[in-house]
Amino acid sequence: MTQLAIRTHRLGRQFGSIRAVDDLDLEVPAGSVFGFLGPNGSGKTTTIRLLLGLIEPTSGEAEVLGFDPSRAGDRVRERSGALLEHAGLYERLSADDNLEFVGRAWRMPAAARRARAQELLGPLGLWERRREIVGTWSRGMKQKLAVARALFQRPELVFLDEPTAGLDPIAAAALREDLAGLAAREGTTVFLTTHNLAEAQKLCALVGVIRSGRLLAVAPPEQLRATVRATRMVVTGRGLDDRIARLVAGQPAVSAVELGDGRLTIALRDGQDTSPLVGLLVAEGVAVEEVRKGSADLEEAFLALMGEDEAGPGGPLGTGRPVRAAPAAGGEPA
Ligand SMILES: Nc1ncnc2c1ncn2[C@@H]1O[C@H](COP(=O)(O)OP(=O)(O)O)[C@@H](O)[C@H]1O
Ligand SMILES: [Mg+2]
Image 1 (cartoon, rainbow, N blue to C red):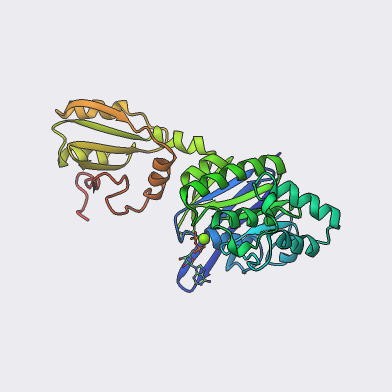
Image 2 (spheres, helix red, strand yellow):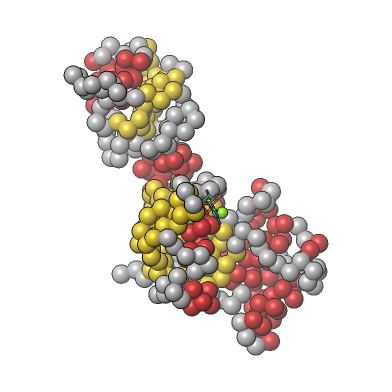
């Protein structure tokens, strides 16, 4: 049995009419990097604040490191490190003094504080620069220091809320590289939020995809990709028209269809085979030229999940007009 660092049961948080976190059931195994992936405003930060006991849930419950954060938030916080949206460094102090401050707050002996600072700042390339005033540093360097600070007291669990947000691509890539190294070395549980797919793919053993406060999927990154690779096909050929699109959309195996640029893009439900649909197209007189199974990367998987039950601009697959299934024969028009 894997040990769980975090478990939530129907956790919810409402702000006025906004359901920031909606019925969240989450299990985060101990000792690995869990990625919470979702667009802006999907409820990632609110979830972290709930898990740290910084705000109260309006429904459901959570267990973090064995404690209920809404009753024993201090227990959770004394065992956790966090890099939240605002790094909260002391800009007028040196990097060294920033870490000294944390080390003293955690009552670490002087020798241990120094050893830990070197251990963390060394691989981040900041050890030689530790006496510089943080306010003069680049955002990338500050974020690295903020990560070092979150890990300083060897917490059992570390929350990193969009650690690379606001960094230029090179600084972001460098920090990702460092985070991968740190996570491997430290062996602590990391709960990392991101809206960046490459980041989730690089760093996370398990990814939970969240949108509008709801958890859409939890899987290792490669499995998320595989799910979508199997469930998307693009057909080109002559005779692809609205009638055909509606016919395909009405098939039980099909979750969404789009027609555009002489192509029919078909999203299949989980585990469905593409060949019966090709047969159907041929039987309906379509001169099929090419059938391509979507070579989904994580980005496609993500977009497909995002569009699963709510067509965004351009429809659920983002390639053309969404087509609705025709009403069943004899049914009432909608
Ligand atoms: N303190 C708050 N008061 C009102 N609404 C909030 C508050 N915090 C977050 N929200 C709303 O909850 C939703 C989720 O926000 P957030 O958790 O910050 O998303 P994310 O971190 O994924 O970008 C958003 O619609 C946001 O506007
Ligand atoms: Mg956020």
